[in-house]
Length: 315
Length: 100
Image 1 (cartoon, helix red, strand yellow):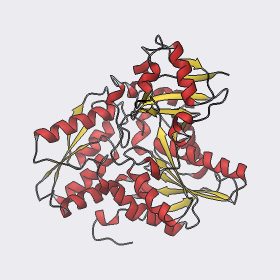
Image 2: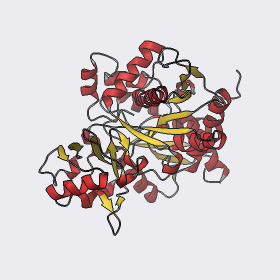
Image 3: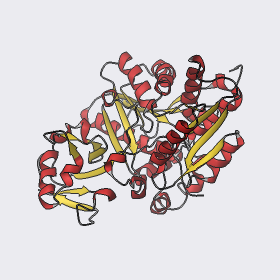
């Protein structure tokens, strides 16, 4: 496959079957390998769409500065897209973010502003909103509320999955900004009546939920519960166990959040088997495992790995 | 009929610091009312609306790890031995892996 530039190669990722983890020939599980995107995660889609949308609406001109609360994959994707187009990127990220993340962002030319570790991403969002108010010329793309984030999946992820798997019965993905589930879910619902759209939400250690009070909570503006059929909370033990199963049994080396998603997908598969229904369950592998090696997720016993993850934002 | 309810850090001032409390009820609403009898004020932090008939926007409650908003909300059925988890809604998504 040939493309004019790296950004043009975003998307069109493989959908691969899981012959060992699928329970039967009638109940099959399929993995959408988003680590095959240019910077190694599904966020390349949202980053590219948000930047293109801002350009189309005149919000971004050459030399502009882009601001985003992200310590993870979205920052890396935006850094790549912004560097290609001559924009400066400033990422607001919790100060306890891993050294790999900082090195990757710096390598692609992003500047990093740290937010307090306590409060996690909530705090990063708050700091970014304050910086945006203080610097009106900076452009915050704001992945949690930018419709272009979901639109990327409505226009690409959804159609790709449906083209590869027209018999799809379930779509399962992680719930963060909610962009993947909202966009892909809306598209697939239009194409496949009765399809089940299932969210897997990582359940972190207690420190991550250390808000001062409930009213400081956060629900992404993009989130519309009506798109989902159901939503599961998946803890670190199950996420780690499934992440390891995926690489040991199917050879797919994925990030930890993918383990949580696979756990929910396998739950749907079990249910289909019990109900005697056929099922084609597609789930999202959001990224590869490379960036998480230092967390200890892939070494030692599950209990040791779980202890290492305590207090970390692992998805 | 007993159900274990996991309580997040910010609400433990209502449970005398307990991480997990036991309650009973055939629906989530009944369970929360039962808890409120033992831990006054707890229910008021979880529900909103004039009649207290809606889950607080920033509160997520899971029965056996499934979000109750997809199981009938406060009308969700609760069975003996179920595990109920209460969590505040926080920003996830492309978040940090800490450490390092």
